[in-house]
Amino acid sequence: MLNILASRNASIVFIASIAGVIALPRLSTYAGSKSALIQISKNLACEWARDNIRTNTVAPWDVNTPHRSHCRA
Image (tube, rainbow, N blue to C red):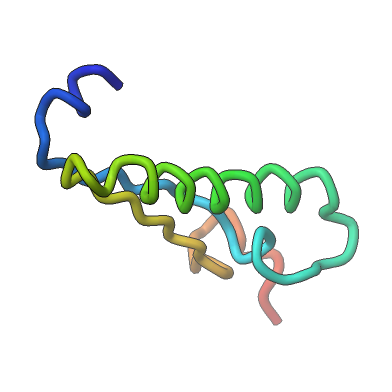
């Protein structure tokens, strides 16, 4: 992190999940960790804005991969 702060111009992208934004059944622990990631991104954006360091979080839904093919109708 010190190198990022020293750069004075950086961007950090976190990968979360839609489960961190909306309630989904049987995902309480997973959703809690993803919502925490979303919140820390917001907090870091506030803390580091004066240093021109941006944070963003991507929260994808279902990603079409071969591993997930058994879930599709």
